[in-house]
Length: 388
Image (cartoon, rainbow, N blue to C red; front, side, top):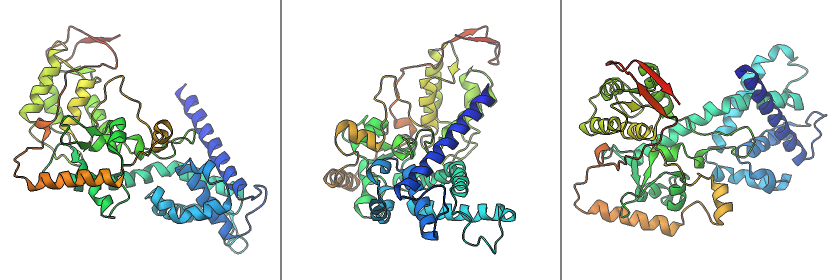
């Protein structure tokens, strides 16, 4: 059944790719049954496809050749990774041309490899297959920038809004412009201290604001959630839906991430929070509940997102936010400057605040993915269990 489902999804994705390529042809009035006349037409179709795929809103708003040509110089402002993506596709063209070299006569088809609709469809299939991993390289770059903003004086996965906005105001970055209201919608705003709002690093990184091709049907490119691999290691190592706090402490202390070195000694605060979770569940910690997800955020604050409670607002993309609220998802320059000024005042004040895991807000509200009834668990955490 899974194989049939996978094949069906793959076929739908391929069909979606072909239709989007057909739209790129039609936008410029190029017949799909005839080869493109020049390398300029070939590049125009490829870049138009990328534009329609990465920025779906352009399919309706940029529906003429003139509009698209006018937009290309501004594309990197709408999507800062545009130039790198175009270069990556050029490299992909060279790789595909080499793979298919035996099928073409280089003397008769020099420069004609991607002139037909079918050859461009094969190229775009390769783009779709590889763009996710390419996009994740950019995600790692964004995370590195966020780590630089967080600085060495913090280890809590938070960035004060003033520092978050400062590089954009200084014309050093196109990134990091989301308004406080939009950050709250994404679940990426820590407002536990209303006088010192901050951005939650993993919630922003994995948020829908960083997803591309949201509305293109079957393609949604989001940053790879690094917490998933950590959870997979825990699930494999524990091999049960719940575990004793001591077993989790021993196992998690051996896990490393981009920003956490292992082995390490988990803090007294982290140990205490595991015990608090276990108190609600007959001495065990369910691995698939809100509290353990919150604990993972405290243990890996830059990799694991802070879980949102049920009933929280549905996160929106930039376009969805603008359409729903009739205002921009980016902060105004005045709002950004206000937070930067406040951050400068705080930096100049003599404060001794500690910004680590122990200082993060913790709530005891539990939500389980599935009800778990513990029955005769053994001393080592084994025994029978039943998922309801």
